[in-house]
Image (cartoon, rainbow, N blue to C red; front, side):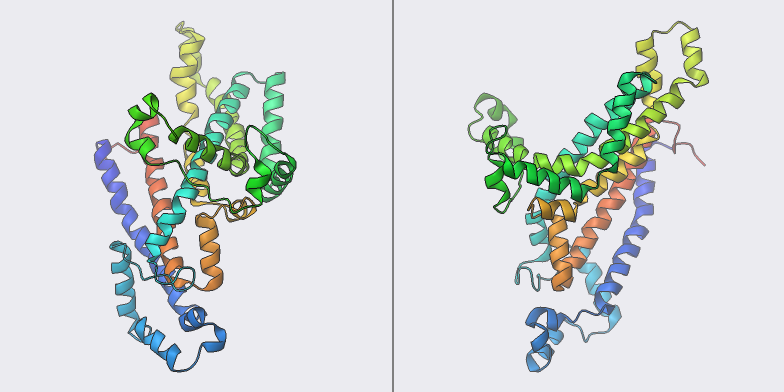
Length: 348
């Protein structure tokens, strides 16, 4: 079975999972205790002619199967009803597109911190066991892993609030205002040559966006960083003592070649599910971290939609989360085949 056939098979198998997820979401939204009329008009105006008109307008008196079919069609066509409470009259997916880039920007840097700090430290500790560097890295990984995100976020906000000007950025001024963290202009990606030859304001926007998101990304990626460090160390220790590594040494291969061709690649295999699962958690957004750092992202939007009973927005957010989760799982399987071609490609 080729890699493309394997990928197609995984996508087809993921479709029933998405259907099951959106079905459960529909049942929770439609059969839950929230009254759409009360959410729109307020609890004190949940009865009367106006409330009945809204219920009929929303199709709540239609048969359940028809509501379910319309719900699926709207999801597939990305044409969910307008938001009821958060932003009345704004389509749910259009509202998500406003908040999603902020969470993606935060998740991107959180994943980078976890990958480029946690894994190298773990591999270094595994290649140098029982040394002072191993003890320091292991102790640091345990400490980072043990600190709750919300506690670390509060401590970091307290420290930054006391700083006048750190790294050329007024953190105290930022933290008392609404922190709308967004990526730099899309022109940066559309014309990278012009960015290099004549950066203009784009480079300044890029630096500002990175500085804005750096504290929250450090907090959000800290637990993943510690977890990947510990698992990476264990994976290297198990791999470096395996029979095929001893055979490679007996054949006279250099230590550098053994590390990069045998140890590094095989040690990545147990890390793949950890990286992909934590990447989904980071990218999908952390409600607590976004609230502490005043980042109006997907986590903040989902919390507000749930509290205020904005059911179309909740359904759309759940659909996006389910698709992201399934996509990450497919990516995990594909990465398995890249790191170890023997995995999943044999014809059963």
